[in-house]
Length: 230
Image (cartoon, rainbow, N blue to C red; front, side, top):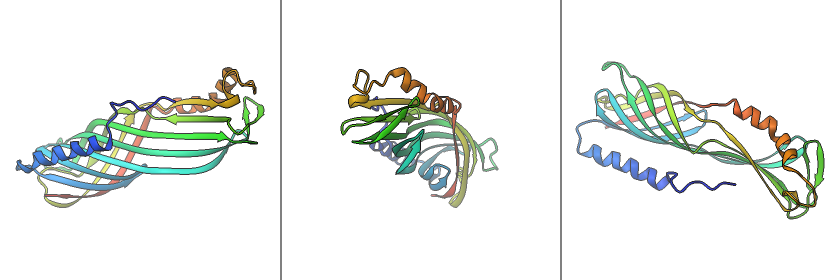
């Protein structure tokens, strides 16, 4: 399994970016705004800083957290682990000085993946219609992962520069990227192991998953929430 690149922004880096925006705003007459929201992919927390009456820059964090469950796929019982977190650096352009409608562009920095793991003594797995009984050190892991960095484009309402106090905001947009499916095997399931599982058998078993996720070229975002400008 490939490790996350060291260049991937950590939560500490993200916090420093928000602090930079906030510090810059203290010396500016333009509005600053904090906002929270909820949507299709979890809870949202963010900060926006007005550059001028028609332009915002902002940073936010959205998360579904981590979830674990047991599932059955192709006659194999897997322990599944979902991790869904994303950070974003965005710019909002308001075409009209009198309207809250905006166009948003930027980038999202994602930690979005699903891990499916089958393993342990006596566990049965089906790979390309062939059944195998695993030993204590044997395991199969399938990972479905979204790219770490993706461009974002969307539209929204709210977070308008120059409007003080409480407000409402909503976003509808997409991050452009494709999910990737990878697998790793341990013990006698590995290539050359005594169980005799070949790479071609594994590829055939995962072909339906790969074909399905290959069709997903964007990840949608729909959020609504409240904000406070000061």
